[in-house]
Image 1 (cartoon, rainbow, N blue to C red):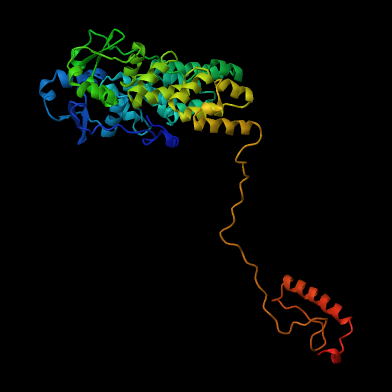
Image 2: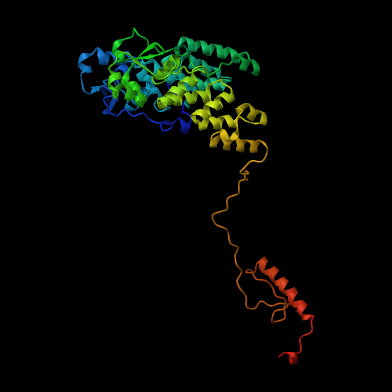
Length: 460
């Protein structure tokens, strides 16, 4: 199938929009295997990869010969860049862009890796700038029914349908796609009103349901090498993977020798078990955050200096949380989330809005950047913004044209006659500015001629 040229990408979707994870670190505390892809070496945690894919479980723990190699080459045709993104997705990162999405999907399906597959589908639903036809081709290939539904929900005209469907026989589509085409064709043929069309559309922003990760006992012992106890609940974890996300766990597992040798390591801090479950999911590529656990997750993520869960929690507050503005503001103050504060103040249009946003406390008790935001926004809604917006000034041309200067003439005479007594005629070299100068001078000389000349005898 062929598709038209894709739409221009938003720079924010590019590979530099978020920080890349480094898999070139050979720290034996964090990694226990090395995989080679296109001559590029990636240091990985075997158990973590095996948890996300049976392909790697078989490669590392069932294929004894390969598992003992110092460097394990991936025989499949896998682009190194796509594998980098794959590793980031199962480690809580996400820098997906339109240049790598198809390769990431290909290897995720090939390795039966559910988490990267879901992340890639969510990217196509929410962030991709691929044209609709390209998205439909991908949805067909990987059987993404919710992506298909979202694409057909945006079809309102024959032109929309024509831009969506590749040039192929309708019978060649998957059965569910053929059904969607038929339903939409009937819909357009019936010429329903615009209101009916709106009622029939679906919400393309809905995210697919997300499953909880299982960290309980009874799981495959090959995938975990440590057990943590939180509020009496046991969590089977990979020490190296947790240590990668937090220096707290790196010290706990690899520096504190006594604790690291315990069969069950209790977390002494007051940590809610439910929040810890979500913390582990966030570091493993999952995300089921909700308003009930968000503060607990934020607290332990900050306490353990875990950047990935902290960023995921902030992103949730910005985009998905249903907490009241004042609750979000209190969290933004506590964790110094400046972009969340800016977003909250941008919604303030009246004094009542400001009143519903700010807690009942002295203004001087807020963070300095918050005080500035309060003052700035209140001045703006009062009609006295500072600084005062300045209208754009037209840019001056690079070169200012200079008017031609007339040739000086020695025989330029006042009055009305030339030396031969005839009226002076202006040659082609004369210009209107010269003519005006002549008339002004003429008037001035004429006024002098009416006065009596001074007596030369009175001149000293």
